[in-house]
Length: 153
Image 1 (cartoon, one colour):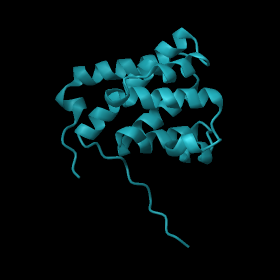
Image 2: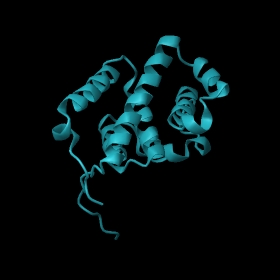
Image 3: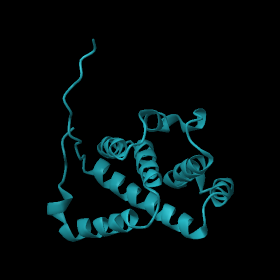
């Protein structure tokens, strides 16, 4: 797979607009673990290797456990996530897959039990932002860096 386009060169103004949205998310006051959860889960759903690689590394850097990171793709089957994280994961899944889910009332009601209206607005903007990044990275075939390969013992 080869990169198709460098957006920073093709349309600096468009890239700047997406960065502005990202800056809002980063400074929104949402807990860091929730931002990591949103970014990593949406990137998994969207099949964005570039973003999954980035958000796994960022999550590790911020001290989230390997188990918390590794089991996110199977979060429904794992007790490692607390009730707030589970509500958030359900909303990330629903909003990221909105064409299939229609953002159902049950997912929203579960979220409402754990977050304020203001937090829900910020969470949903954060989900939208990572979905934009995922669509850009996948569409333009952005390549994640390849770390030194580990060898099995």
